[in-house]
Amino acid sequence: MSAPTPPADTRCSKRRVLTVENLCVDTANFRLLDGVTFSIDGDERVGLIGESGSGKSVTSLAIIGLLAENLSASGRVVLNDVDLMALREKQLAAHRGKDVAMVFQEPMTALNPSMKIGRQIAETMLIHDTQPSKKTAMREAVKLLEQVGLPDPEQSAEKYPHQLSGGQRQRVVIAIALANDPSLLICDEPTTALDVTVQAQVLDLIREEADLHDSALLFITHDLAVVAMMCHRVLVMYGGCVVEAGTVHEVFESPRHPYTAGLLASSDLDEVDEEGNLQAIPGSVPPAGRFPDGCVFRNRCPNATDECTVVPPWTTRDGQPVDAVSGNSGYACYHPIEMPR
Ligand SMILES: Nc1ncnc2c1ncn2[C@@H]1O[C@H](COP(=O)(O)OP(=O)(O)OP(=O)(O)O)[C@@H](O)[C@H]1O
Ligand SMILES: [Mg+2]
Image (cartoon, rainbow, N blue to C red; front, side, top):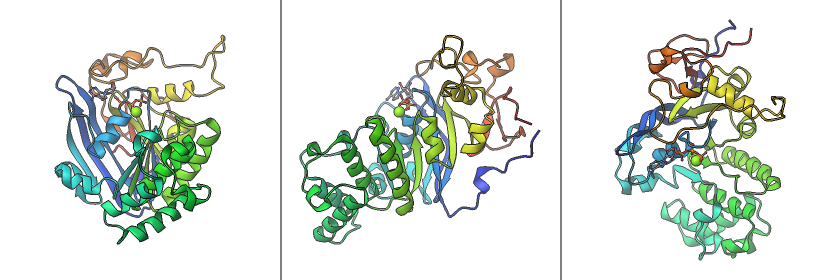
């Protein structure tokens, strides 16, 4: 067995920005998220990956307190020492867009179609009192448009969203998200609605801007290559649980959870069967509320045994059981993939 890898949360780091502890989300009838636990430091970019329906967006919406009305959350979400789950909606709204900001998949849904984009950026600053006057806010808005690469920023500020391309609109959304230098930027599939050529530019922009504005990043995507390019650490999610976590290098080079190994194999163009099909994980993600008891992955897992009917404990990456879950490093599985020697 190789030398134990130090847990990611002992990295030399600036400050803890986000702590998520035992986050659970329920409908009236079943559980959607079960015990999600992780943290992010100020200098980190963390990827959240998993197949469609694994609970990535529900996690991000629970963090910023924007869950649908039929859902309820429990656990702890602490942003810069503030326990967000203990706040009322009005108090929470004061943090949203200021200390934590989000970029969603479809830029048009985040923009007001009837307001010029310069003003939309300025309003974000004025609402949170981070600029003293309309005039300074407008000046900052133009600067931000320049930073995110819009051509002729002063003229662009006078345009409406429909006068911009999809890529330009997403640049504006990024400018709005970063206008108040949030401690945490959450991006949920921010480039899937964009042309392939524009995607790479927008990803570069998010990475550069998060660094420039000193914002930690939680980056949600299906695309493992994007996580490898964007992130320091990665959380692998399935069935509303984080099943594996570690640095991008650890998880991608030596996955321990069979689900992670399946995800990696199904995205690896070298791993094709005789018919030339990508190796996929057998079966599909069950609908919410239909995951098996015990290990949520056991009905699709090649390694599953009777033991897996009991929830597997969180284990360090080198296989030592731990008392407390650290969603930052480790995995939850009785029959992990062997580490390479
Ligand atoms: N308001 C809701 N009520 C009931 N179930 C919901 C609700 N919102 C989400 N779900 C279910 O929760 C599960 C996780 O959804 P979520 O949107 O987090 O998945 P995801 O990992 O973001 O997937 P994708 O990659 O497709 O965006 C899905 O089965 C979804 O149908
Ligand atoms: Mg989603």
